[in-house]
Image (cartoon, rainbow, N blue to C red; front, top):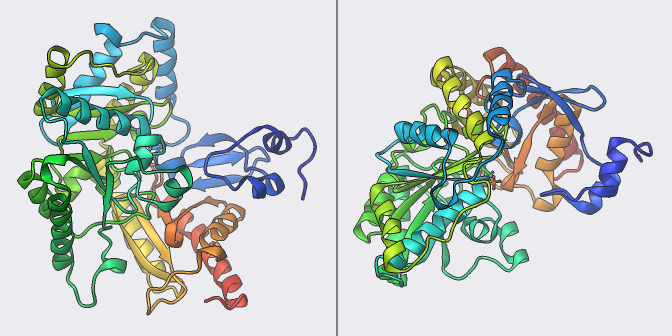
Length: 462
Ligand code: PMP
């Protein structure tokens, strides 16, 4: 069906090159054009209403119509619409937000650096580590170990950290010096009969062996999301991170935690690090930092890393890193207001309550569904993985695009869903969602799941 000429859809097809989109299919099918939002709902340009089960891209934590954030941006634009933070310039929003983040950090942190996106923040953290190790006289300690199925963004270095095939080979990545170890997903990767704890031990031993094989004097840092998001919402065993951290300490390898999705109460604690028992040297965050009303990301470093970087100016030369918009006053003002709102609303208590409801209902309604292999998650983040063979834990052939087709059915039924690798659906609604809205979201998801089940059966691929 061709969209009417001069419609939004036709002009989108004519002019826009989208992220993560099948361009040829898009030329035929066109976009869903979202025009406005209210609470946990968005509306397309035809007036159709959808519940946003993923808060956009795991990010619109306060929903789509928070007036205080609009006012915070407007007020800052009137007062000082732009200033930079190069060469020791500063401004109040940058200072206030830095202080607030350090006060809220999961472990003692020293300084905050700002960027505009999760990818830029991860790239910045890599450059901090490389610069620091040059500065303190260990220039060979540069390799970085991340994990298969981890997601850390798409700029050249962040995409190298990412552990998903679509982000690597087709773009001639990863860059040299980036390595990946196994995914802590017990459901798929444990040996027959292996306990969660034994599985965690095996993964920690794998990391240890990898560091030893590479040479500990060449390995600088380990990168991890507390809960893998875009890789399919994968929760590690409880003892995984403590065991991993012991290995890193032994070899003097820094732990960088990527809290871009998990930060700001998503998992039921302020930070995913607290939920998963992580004590990072460097913490990267973005998304819910500003409720995504404006782009901003941050890298927090501990005193040891800061001292290493500070050493550089005298030992090797200028710290030549920073973005025009590092700490831009308008997104910084919005982020300050966002953090105040989280505190005032006691959003953490709300997430714990409605998150428990979402987790319970997802399991009650879908764990026994013939197409559902695993329901997993905590707080307000969850994954539902579809399988062709439940007993064998066998996924569908990716060519069948079962997850993607389910998202299309979901749109017809008024719920925006997100399908990832292995046909895992991610649930990460705005943190302000109510129990009633969760129930409605799951009604629409359940209806869509039943519809795809009929289709899949008809195609006899299940
Ligand atoms: N890290 C994680 C954990 C993410 O989920 C994402 C984006 N989904 C990124 C980094 C990259 O962020 P951005 O898209 O803002 O570059």
